[in-house]
Image 1 (cartoon, one colour):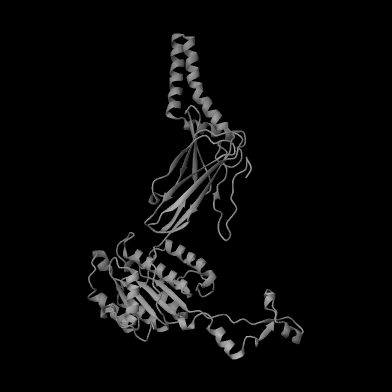
Image 2: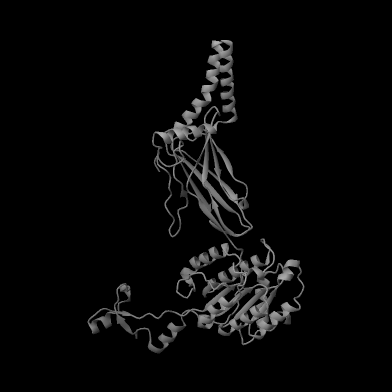
Length: 484
């Protein structure tokens, strides 16, 4: 780094630069570069007079009063004192406004994606890229109120080419995407007569994702159709060297060229590579507004979002191709046209994309929307395992959910009783809610009632005990060997 140049660290491999540099504003205008002369400079100077501090306004008022008294009383010495008092704040304002030193600001988030109720640290850096030292600076960053109070820092004189670094912490109990910035600098003169606030244009975004729980691996239907089954079957029939080549196509990797077949056919031939089959899973999140009661971090809807996030992360770690589906029929785009996101090297990107979606998911807008659209998507290609997080169901919606089981290898439903969550009661479900659970179980679902404040880890572990026949009858029975 050389003096007079803004510091911009090199970008990290596969990720954003560690610092997001903002434009270096001219202290006169707050925008990069210098303001053109003429009316813009005059307008900016008049607006700069609004930055006079209480001390500066007091000096100006005292000078004007002294000048008036000197004129009335005919006192020349008093007039000189009045002019000095009045001119000093104006001169400080002009000098501060015309100062041409440049300051570059940058911000770095560690990390930029955090679970709810987890702290993130914001690092701010100010570089003086001019040849003049700065005066006293007050640094202020704009943050939403849900992240905490607005941070303010006082920076001493920054030498030419010098830098100052400060940091603060932010935390939110509510998921979402929160903008940070723009960064603001408050410049002041040595006498404290005037203060000018200049803002940078760049800002960053902090993504607060749902909280997740670590789930214990249990054997699930569909794993026997996992990665590499098709490849192993073909090798058993043909052998490693007995391959079926095809003609070379533009874009094929030259490392796949089969030279023996190329010599035989007189043209470039490449080895066919069978795409491995992966177990598929769909996580269905019910976002109907009438299916949930209450709001806030401890509400039933937030529990369902957090449960869906935990299931997604768990399935991706197990090597499943996963799709996130809502009751509106929309799914998070995956690596393929069917919406399924792959595993292995792409699992981190897929998990990040789905977590970003869950960070901002809200109730569906259509008050009459049900589960019919999600059923249409699953009916068109709903093979694989299905894990659903459902709110309160009426008779028609329970019937639609029951039909979803027909195309799924295994079906697991976490059903939240809105009345119990509204009352904060952990008692066993009864009446209409128990009828809905029985209807789902009769159609082949493994339906689990979710009491208020329940732990997803405990419910998940109960599924394994239920599969082994040691679970309680209250949680239902598994039909068709769904979890074996």
